[in-house]
Amino acid sequence: MNVHDSEKMLGVLQEEYSRTGDPRKADLIIFNTCSIRQKAEQKFYSELGSIKSYKKGRPDMKIGVAGCIAQHSGKNILRRAPYVDFVLGPQNIHKISDMVSEKAAPFALEDNSEIAIKDLPVKRTDGLKAWVTIMYGCNNFCSYCIVPYTRGRERSRYSENIYSEVVELADNGYKEITLLGQNVNSYRSDTDFPGLLRKLNRVGGIERIRFVTSHPRDLSDELITAISELPKVCRHIHLPMQAGSSRILRLMNRGYTYEEYIKKVAMLREKVPGISVTSDIIAGFPGETENDHQLTINSLKEIKFDGIFAFKYSKRPGTRAAGMQDHLKDEIKSERLNEILKIQDEITTKKNKLLEGTTQEILLEGESETDKGKLTGRTRTNKIVHIPKIDIKKGTLIKVEITKGRRHSLEGII
Ligand code: SAM
Ligand code: SF4
Image (cartoon, rainbow, N blue to C red; front, side, top):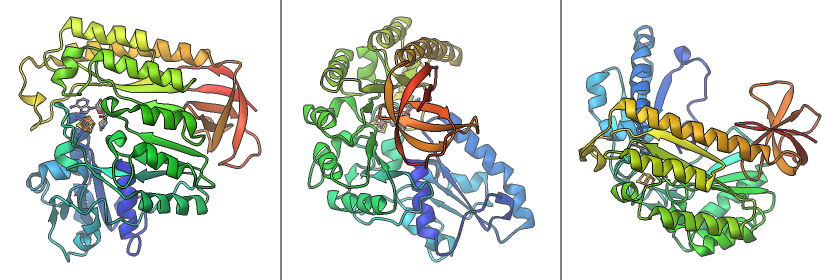
């Protein structure tokens, strides 16, 4: 989401600025920050400190702080770093040009009720895959999460505007879109999320439609049917479970029990054969007992996700969980996280090995980042495949045979 917000900032500023690879030579530096966990905040403050010296030799250089830390910390940022020129939250990207040219006040942190109506220009560079926002904000208030406080209330864009953006992307050669929202399943404007998928499935030139993130509570039968019926919608769902203990899920305010969650996964797998299911897991939520943790471990073994992102619980000031009793020691959180990652690594490797000998369709994304002698693509199920280099254009769909399943990727031949 932040990567795409940066594309919008570039879009708004494109008349006046272009990108440079060297921050020391920049006229303007914008930090687009994330505050989902404390680690991201610490990284930002250390980066911010390290560029102080740049400005000494270049007093005309402007420094802006955008994103969720900007929203949450506001004027405190100036107290810590008086050399910052402006601070704007994620709902105020439209003001960035005026803020840079000092036509607007140096703080923009207010709620923007028009965010889903007034679209911003977007400057993309990929040419093949594009992020497309379908909704802003979040109303869920999961007890650990800062997002509803920084990104404001849930607001959906009109399906017609999303459709036009996707048609334009297709006209410009884009092949894959990823629809973005904190909770895409609760998208609602003139249609609902399955309706939006049906509409976008008709756009010629677009080969693949992905979406993040789906909230398990709002995963409907209609959506599962749409995924199974629509050929462009990829067979992958990121469905964050967060924990395998229903007691912890209740404390997290997630709105489903573990039993309800596994029923939804079973239904997805029944109606959409071969679908890959990935998840987010939080280790060491306040009050999590060893028994709760073991329920999460058991759930990983039972569900066998294709992959997970797992994180240590991080206390976010102002959220409900921050005020709960029994916060766990960092040591325990680390131990539990490591156990989760170890078990899941084994599961992912086994699942990837099962694909050896199968034929998969991949969308070629270009040279591999780690091995220049190879090309990289992704399956519809979002698995990375490396193949020996051949003379084929980026953006081509090709069939490959999987020769090796590894922990984080697959090897294949054309
Ligand atoms: N809206 C998405 C959802 O509910 O599935 C997720 C959005 S959040 C940006 C991505 C992930 O960060 C969450 O699924 C959760 O696992 C993790 N997360 C959020 N707040 C956290 C916290 N305070 N500590 C640790 N992980 C956190
Ligand atoms: Fe955060 Fe929950 Fe909203 Fe996701 S659904 S952004 S975890 S509050």
